[in-house]
Length: 290
Image (cartoon, rainbow, N blue to C red):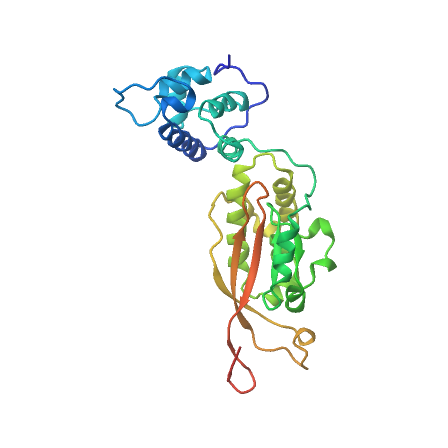
């Protein structure tokens, strides 16, 4: 029988906010189940929706008080005990993984994971006019399309260990010249990254990137020490083409692009950054060019 004091491994603590999210997640599953779903007899006199807390506690092998605290976000748990709760609530693999992440657990990764669904690469290649990147969980650049290299510096020219979108924005002059308004983009990407990092404690990719950022831009240490989080917001950015990219003797005026970060489903946890061109005023005659 699992107990609240047994931990089969060192405990990784979740933040208070994540513990509360875990509690709400478990409560929603508990309320969606009927006694018959878990092999208990149905009774007509039930004041609570779904299963009672004491029923889940008994099925999980924990005390009612402790399970109540778990739903209230007041306690941490171990993988072993959370697995028992997941079985009691009939969580599928995806829901169980999500519960583990909210509890502060995530699979440890070693080095850079460059595997990805080949369909994602095919999707990038299907956008001939929209520059796009395929990004890993720590925003490492995994793949890109020809539209991207026609507009922005080719990631292939950067050593693989430094091929990270945030690192290039804050530490590479070519990217800063191409995207003059790089600072708010980099800040929001880092907030987005922090949100994901809190769900994947111990992930090697996040730790490695933080070290690289501190080394590349120690003057921005206030950024790297900030605990602010948030999802990346879509925006309009201006990209400056160089003379060689535009095919002219001089570069065109900055062209506006809609920048969006599209998230892929778990467990891959990748993302696609896509730039969709918008009309701009041609520098030569002021006419609108598509």
